[in-house]
Image (spheres, one colour):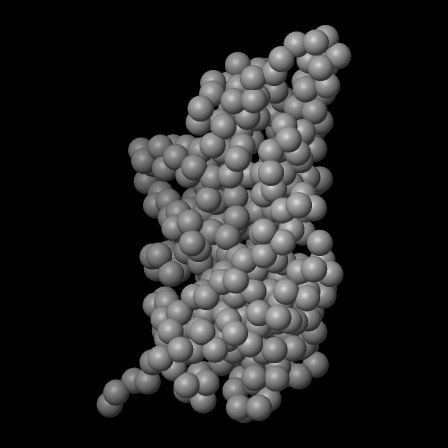
Length: 344
């Protein structure tokens, strides 16, 4: 008896990428189409929610059609449609959620709501099979978290950011150095051209805490720049970027290693937009090279927001029997729970 392949469509519109993907059996990408809006937001130094929502409306139908064409799949062949329910910009989320609901209703296809961070974590399953228990280091524009998983669909946040996430700190430091948006890649590039010669703080917080704080580090960088300007001294951008990045990576990696030992995990997954950071990828690879723990780092195309990761997470939730009905709504404050249960 031939077992039918599972085809899941993923839709992601939580911020400024309109993305649709189709994934087979939870691990094979048949199509992963992303329409980026970076050029539209660059002149504002950050994402403008109203502009993002309007672009999603303009792009959604074209991106949907392109994904189906690339995958050579008819919409009626889909087993489910997975869509980012939250967190994110509420206007942007609503475009994706309503597109998914319309498509599901018109074709009588099951609907699955997915947490955005769960998607980032499951991007790793498109690279290698997940082995439990595992730990995921999630580093993105709005989130810096350590998430423990003992099985599929089980998300336990053991550490999270208390103020600025790492990605936010990167963007704010980049603005201080007059670098264009998004600032992360520019800081990363400069950091590899300079040496860490400036002493900057590391926020370790209280003993035993896996939480993160980058607000103080960001402020320290701004103070270094302002003090130099007042004294008429010139700051070497490459040295400041290298010093800042060294501080961020030191805290991220040290806390991850400590958690890995305490929770005795088999795998460490890197997830989120800042997972594209070359310095972080190199340091994690080197650190875990001599440890009896597998490190999984997704390719750059799966680090930033995309819909393949939503489809990958959605396929697991679909198999677990999770379904959303047509009351599904965008939830900008959605929290990732132990079983990632939908709010319906």
